[in-house]
Length: 159
Image 1 (cartoon, rainbow, N blue to C red):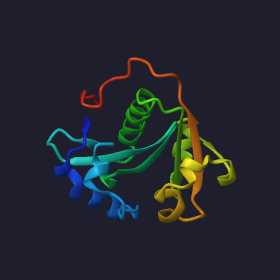
Image 2 (image 1 turned 90 degrees about the horizontal axis):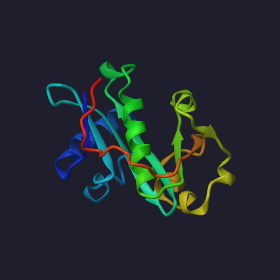
Image 3 (image 1 turned 30 degrees about the vertical axis):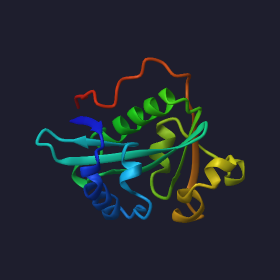
Image 4 (image 1 turned 60 degrees about the vertical axis):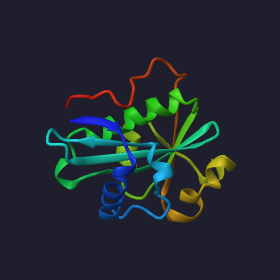
């Protein structure tokens, strides 16, 4: 497996994978693509995606999806780790997310469930939080360590 930075040409593939996983696609555009990572298998097929939305000192982790046949193989965990490194390198202090189906996965990755009332305004006002995800979604946060020499998103990783 290799993880790389998404490109404009990946937009339809990202939207298709999100749609197949019942995740919002309404605000996924070429402008947001630069904040996405793509996991590919050895043949170059997209097997996972994940993105960030920078919101001042907070970062929203969004649109994490893995194709069904590749689930349980560590792809989602690798994407989350790489996205967290990217968020930390860009000065993010907290990573926030909303999930309706993956609370257990994110708890194991070090996230804690928080009340929506405790979410900063910059996060509450983003479209993903205010309109696209249901109010029943779990709201979660992870505090990031200070930025270090995080690996570059284009560096391939092995699985």
